[in-house]
Image 1 (cartoon, rainbow, N blue to C red):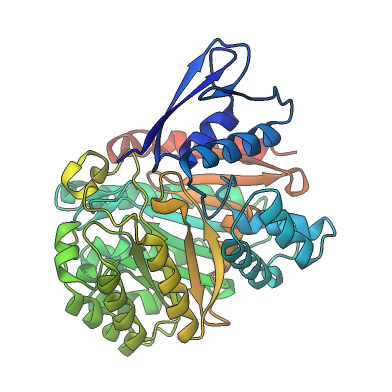
Image 2: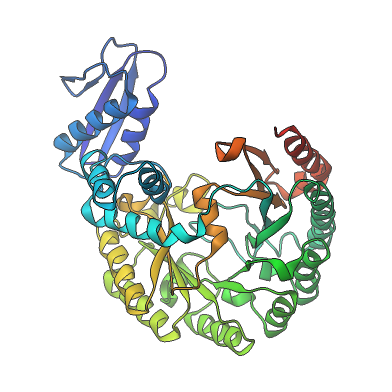
Length: 459
């Protein structure tokens, strides 16, 4: 429930972006309204200086609203999605570690705990960041199908039962896009480092379809030269021994098996059609098939979950002893069913999510893991973060480069985005694939043409 209402008056017809960003920080404790057309910016009855520097305006607004509400975000007025990238930039500017930590805490008002997390993550990333190389690229392929749609999901994900008649056609078009994109890319890039298969849930395909899917990449990409070939196996109820064998033959080196929680009552509540025992069975099966780099995704703050329930999940994961865990803070996104579900929104664990995030970090430490990438999103409970931990040597280069934005990514499939890094690493241009499966099947050739224009336009 909102504890107070704040009206921000601003000049012009559109609120300055700094005002919008700060309003989002306090979304959990205050109802904030912006009113246009005033000569000065005001919060309640307090006049704000007319800052030319948007960062100073943002800092002033944060301080003032914090005083009114009594709320301090753990990330202060920092709203960027890549905190570790800010640390890397400050370190590259010549600051030492102590100076960077002070900058985060004094300028952005970040808590000491979060500043230390960002620093630790950046230092783990450092060996992977050897400068921009225009001749190197990574691949991403998107499979827009899942067994069912989760309550919190906002990704390009559709029920595979509903779309089963077009799955084979989708694979036809995806392979055609892969072939065409590979032909364009081989003229520009010397080699590829990483391939990431996400979604959706690639393993939601039946066994014959999955065999076809997982093996198509080797026709156009030198799998043996990759540093990482990662597969989002995701839903435990979609994993079979034959699919795991096919993935192993295709050269997959890293997989994700994602329970989100190990509490069956929550799994049912959020629309995951599997149980805790199926998670354990899928994990055991993957070990038996020789997978020695397994990540598991968890979510802090799921509807109805208590600290004790989250602790139970962590205890179960510790017994499985994966190589990595990715801990997400629940984010209520516009495209998610949760946004429109008042009952489950009312059961959110916003008051304890910070403790859950701390518990997960402690659990990761017990398993010998360190943070290697992190990012933040809008509308996260408690303004926390998503962070991925792993044992040393099991970092995902693909995810590190995605966060640092220092690597061209070639994307195929519905909803995929191609990002081309240009101008010595100082500029990024994007080519978007349509998200709709139906439109993708109609317009795949246009998606290829977009990539062609982008790759050929680079100077």
